[in-house]
Length: 92
Image 1: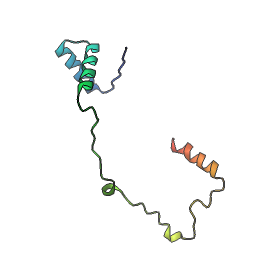
Image 2: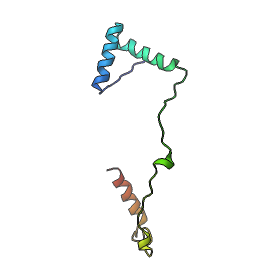
Image 3: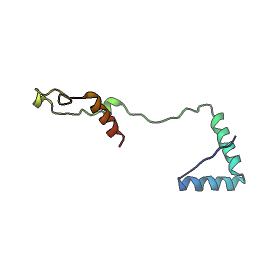
């Protein structure tokens, strides 16, 4: 098997180079060592902090009560074209 890795982080590149120099190993040996370390760990689940949704949620006030006679999207005549345009603009 062949692995290729591209690292843009200059600090990380320097740390890896420093580690390989101190251990007198080649890049392939470093990758094998790294993968063995990862797969031999008992707990390989990624851990990350989460936030409580109720604590960070914000209410968005669209002030629609002042326009109580307005129905949402009543000005849209062709729903298919409108939704297609929304999707197209969402990825810009």
